[in-house]
Image (cartoon, rainbow, N blue to C red; front, side, top):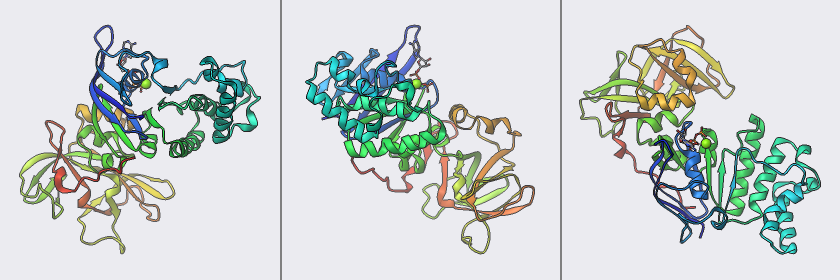
Length: 398
Ligand SMILES: Nc1ncnc2c1ncn2[C@@H]1O[C@H](COP(=O)(O)OP(=O)(O)OP(=O)(O)O)[C@@H](O)[C@H]1O
Ligand SMILES: [Mg+2]
């Protein structure tokens, strides 16, 4: 009923800005789809086209079984929550919740029932008589969501609904949104540039860059099998370590190191230049509990950050860092600072280690690197290489 199909949807703004470029995407009925990507990549534009608030320049929007491409927003049976949820300041919470249904001339009993349901689900029962100014930021946000809920739309569209809240409240609201979706099962499209939100909320996540969908998959799939360099650099925090390297003789060579490729790697027979990606979590500190079968590298950490459960260790390696467009575009958003400390041409690596290890800055240490967690990309195209090595894990249909 509430599935959304985008068929080759484009948006060219006046002046020729191509904000969305031929996007085809299926949001399954009941699915929580997250649109993520750096600023200006077209997330809001895409969402607004689903809502009907922005005219499409090309393509087709289908909600349920209906082509709504040329249907006005109020007739699309969807509800949208914006970042700047404007509540009516002089109306009470109850009146704010009821407003949309009242305008539609819904029967009074129905309005009361829906408002009561929404208030109960969102924990707003005690506050129905208050005005927005008497609520906290999180409570106001809940009213905004409640206002969308009472309409019982066939889909929810949310554009960075939590970005006005402080970090702690964001985390709480994130959990509430997840539970709400679990309970109501309403098809949801959620825009964010916060990848933690994307990864924790999304049934599937669509990564956009320059108005083009780079990959749309479950969070695990995006993390474990990024299709290209941009997705690899964008998803994951700290970001994937990326360097220029060469595969030869069954090893990947960089910075004077030769790390044997994993047994099943389809690249074992290759001799070619690649971009090598290593997730920070692929490293472990060498020691009695380390896996001795794994290749070892010696490093000198120049920065050690203890975060409790884990320790982040950064170190330089004499390899050429990757600074292509794709990586810069991804890092701009995620780790702007990492480039500033870059003492090029040395590559900066980050390893995430178990919090019980005690690395010390400037003191040499050994790390083991899990060669099953290496990623390879074509230096020219940025496309992932050797992805066929693992069976693709399809997300369970929602
Ligand atoms: N009304 C407009 N007229 C012209 N260009 C626009 C208009 N609205 C957006 N754009 C451009 O379209 C592109 C996509 O904008 P959009 O707002 O969809 O990005 P976004 O991914 O939501 O970014 P953010 O994360 O900053 O909210 C940007 O280059 C933006 O400057
Ligand atoms: Mg936006």
